[in-house]
Length: 263
Image (cartoon, rainbow, N blue to C red; front, side, top):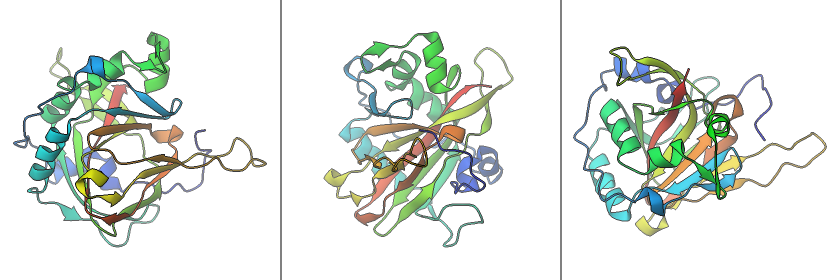
């Protein structure tokens, strides 16, 4: 169940939520990313449901590809989050790097199985029609947000309970010199680490609300780390309260972006 309106909702920090702010800081470029190969074939993959209309997962990247990216990302100038968050922001302790990179976002969308799985979604064995697709994704899907966020959580680091905001963005158009208005509707977290790489803890935990005040809160939904797993969850007004569990050993590496739809 989506959260009810609240006077104050703990949010992710503004730097992570606002691409234009980061672009003004100078990280608007195209990095020399590793090749996005080997890829997993879309026909061999499926969207798995952790919570209907709210949380989906898919094994998107191979173990070898994740290893290549962990090595590359470790060379970037990651910055540790401030110890004290701003008013209304959730406490987060990690190292991160942001870049506005349309080329990487386009490759992550089109050179992996994401585009096929999201534009022609099959949920619980049912192929969705056009209206159901728009309802699921929050509009007509364009692709991925060019605001790419890299997160590394080391031992003792975590992300406290929070909600992810929806943001208005400008999406590049192949048919026009002008970008088209868009908005983000789902968070995408691509995990590059797991217990298999030495990372302990760090699961993403969702906290659904009860249907009424008389009912007990449902059990938390836990998305465990798995190398190459992509986690998609709704954000904005329909976002569930969630957190990044503390890492107790090793390192948790995540690539974060968002699904964009027409605005």
